[in-house]
Image (cartoon, rainbow, N blue to C red; front, side, top):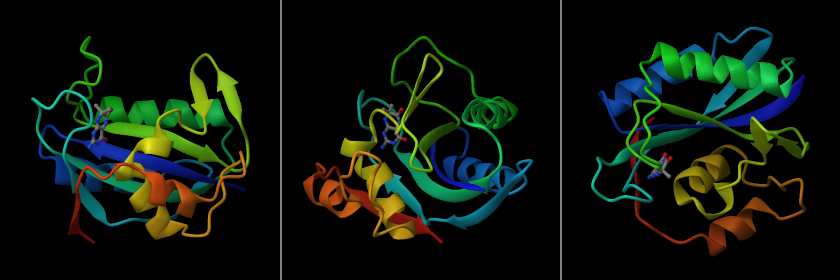
Length: 161
Ligand SMILES: CC1(C)Nc2nc(N)[nH]c(=O)c2N=C1O
């Protein structure tokens, strides 16, 4: 089994319910086991500010799925929960499931970049991830604690367990 971390984000269509539903869907992925889910965090949007606040979380999964097969499953859940891929870059969305880390692997594929390209400066990813894995070291050798310390603070609130 490979240990992976997935970021959950939503700011449309009852985001708390979207996030909770996504975590339940992740718990029944084939060839996978949900190990742990962070609390739900509320956060101001990074990017265009004229959109609702986000609900964010991170989950820890153990999986036998390959990276692209796992990505397919994540995109299936997004579509099942009504995600419509809009043109607007960084616009609001019902559900975003981003593969942050896939074991120690560095993946550069046209469909998939791991570690997730934006995670190092996203408070709404780093803090939930640190809740689950405070001693984590990224494949590049950077400790998560260092990224958390350096990360710009945009204001995160804890919404629910
Ligand atoms: C639009 C962009 C970059 N901003 C976000 N901002 C926050 N706070 N949370 C997100 O999940 C999120 N996702 C995004 O894709």
